[in-house]
Amino acid sequence: MSFALHGLAVSSGIAIGRAHLVSHATLEVAHYKVRDKEVATEIERFDAAVAAVRAELEALKGEASAPGTPSEMAAFVDIHAMILADPMLAEQPRDLIRERRCNAEWALVQQMEQLAAQFDDFEDAYLRERKHDVVQVVERVLKALMGKARKMTKRGRDEDLIVVAHDLSPADTIQFKNLKIGGFVTDLGGATSHTAIVARSLAIPAVVGLHHARPLVREDDLVIVDGSRGVLIVEPDARVLEEYRLRKSELELERSKLKRLKNARSTTLDGDEVALQANIELPQDIEQVREVGADGIGLFRTEFLFMNRDELPGEDEQYEAYKAVAKAMAGRPVTIRTLDLGADKEARALAGSERQSTNPALGLRAIRYCLAEPQIFLTQLRAILRAAHYGNIRILIPMLAHVAEIEQTLAMVAQAKAQLRATRHKFDENIRIGGMIEIPAAALALGPFIKRLHFLSLGTNDLIQYTLAIDRSDEAVAHLYDPLHPAVLRLIHQTIVAGARAEIPVAVCGEMAGDPAMTRLLIGLGLRQFSMHPSLILEVKQQVVTADAEMLAMRVNRLLRFEEPDRLRELVEKLNA
Ligand code: PEP
Ligand code: MG
Image (tube, rainbow, N blue to C red; front, side):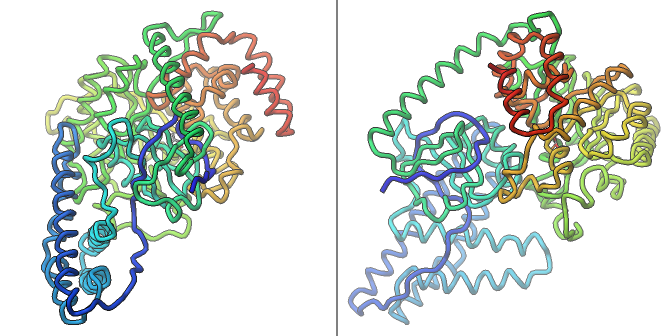
């Protein structure tokens, strides 16, 4: 039966493919008796399912060892293979089937519960977490038992794999970077949740906040992800499928035409230069950055280097990662943001040591965490300072609100430099340090920031979250997330104006910068530095090269006087007409 679900469009384009369900299925399975003469067949059925999953894991392991795939992927597949080989899962269900004359699914889930209970008793948080892996392995075997195992090799050549999940953390999502996935949908998540941001950086169509996709979609269902309209269509009829195939090829054609803009200068019609820089999560993203000819890296979200691993990356490992990016950018600016962990971004290596907080987005996040953990912060600062010797690196500090935080940060940078001097390491003495303006308090009292820092970068994702008091990860309040709220526009405008007056650069690196519908508005607000996912740069450039900056400034100045949302929206639409 065909049906459609509506959610939030987070990454444009169309993907058509087979659903692959990720995260836990409900493990409620039927329990029934099998007849004596059927016991042997039931055991065979169980053995065949285990063998199928073993083969599936081996195939996955082959994919995970492809060049550029993080080592965690292979380790993760190894853990699943080890769990599958555990006699409690691979052998004992056979005894249960024989002794109790029960079906294979039920026997397997009984054993899983016993095994999972053993994990609950571990003191070590990492080992306790492995319980989830046990559940995932059992899910795979259950799917195989139901004849629904994912047959990666049997997918049609032109059929993509569409990930369907209830909710995924940013750490889960980043792992998809190395797998060939055609589209991405989740039930939870706001449009600027970090999961959505990572999904967008995969440069594939994505829809979040669908509410019921995970329970309603079945493994291997044919689905269409319309990432521009925020729709998931399940088992489309032939007419809809044909229409979407056509739109997909039209979009692909438009995208390939955009490539012509790669070497065009990013200048408005009246000659203002507009820098279009890239946001990255991992050094491997540089390839995509170069493909679109970005003017530099405006935001390197370094916390992603800290996820999905058992030990934090040390100074040398971080230094190599930052240096690789600086060298690849060959003199163009590389803005390395210091660790912004906390809220929805967790590092497994720190699990257990982190405090539980009632409101994590308002808690010990980003610079607050770094100042509370000086050794972690100093290690990162030393790595950045050393890498800066090899390129045009700048440091960006997230979530600043207080003058004392800026001063403590600057003191820590001075301390990191002193340590490097003492150990005779080469580093950049004159590194520039900037601050993210993403807390309204910072935007409202900018003086001390301008006085102490070299540049500013507006983090509109958080600025909107904190100005409008809505959790950016919570799809229940996603409709209240509004970049065009007059309060938000004024905070952005006054930051850009204050920066220009003091002659210090101001960029926008939140998702607003990558939305082509916002480009003219931001130019009119005076913005000349944008940073966004590389996949969006050419679309935004198309807006820049057809914009008249002087005329936009006049129209946007008038628009700022309005407070009625409908009127504001109408005026912004007119800018784009
Ligand atoms: C922002 O808040 O706008 C931003 C760029 O940072 P992040 O999305 O990583 O919080
Ligand atoms: Mg932020």
